[in-house]
Length: 244
Length: 222
Image (cartoon, rainbow over the protein chains, first blue to last red):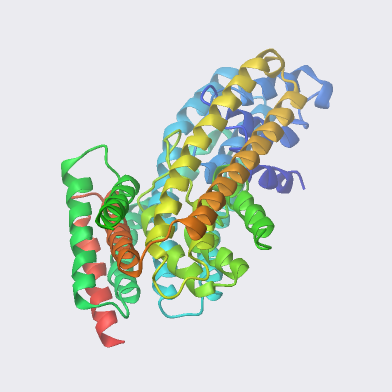
């Protein structure tokens, strides 16, 4: 039951995200139900000390926060030396961020989005968000549940779970799969958006696209797609206003 | 007042909070936020069209750590409102512009919330350092409440701009088509740049090319 409580709290791990402790406060909020098992319970000195340590600086991918919170809480309950717990805390930051970013932000999210974009061209609008949510959250909740279990089962030895071969293969293939998916979605969505357009309009849009990729990708480091979009639409609009 | 506004405000608040604070199930993605907003406004086709355009822009964002990134959820809700009821592709360009500006403002709002959270943590430092769980709970509650207010404000601002654009920014048919051409072209550029960011500009191009060739074959077969 307590792990279920930690899981629900993990959904709000970034609720108090701040520049001083990043997700530290969220990790403490997650760990708190597990720390009640420490000697003396909620009013004990060990509980207060462990909660204080939990609330200090920590950063991780939010979906792997359960792994960190459960592993650190397990280590506290097993009476592992404070130095060892601090060492684990520092060691987890880099790998958890890197694995989470590769699997979710660079993998599952763009893949699910690309599939949804492609399906939007074929299916009724009501089904598209449902398919996206199912696809994406299968990976999302799968990762959260795996992380929480791995952290709780392994405690101070949680690095073993992170060095599994399956995780490495997934992390290596996520980027290429996302590239293929988004690459597929681009011409499919373009054809859908261009439907009913004059040939000259299509050429115009492709020219804007080429200009955008050149300017954002190769010329201006600080320019991004959003700013280019605002600029492109804004310039066309201003030209229209001036010509009236 | 348009009767869909309260529902859009509520939906915009939920999708805005979902992005970072709770529960990150990605209703914040434009493909979800825009599709649902399309149903709320009674224009599901316009909703899914603007959702796809905004999703292509959102593909460029990799929300790592404390990085500053736009909030496309409430922005797409506002854009779906702006596009609703317009025939064909006429309002897509203007709605995209409204969406992009709102997304940028939403990103600034996220930074403001984070700074407010940091001040709150500084104020609660002694209680946190004594292991006080009520301090932890309070910080979580206030942080999520701040984010909800931010998302609500951003959605409201986007809807006001959308309403004003629908009422007073009279764009003739020719200009509306040109705006849509610019919006669609820019969204495709953002999608391609996003793919290059995800896979790596050099080594990843082959994967994007493989996908694009498959997509072109698919388009020509259908």
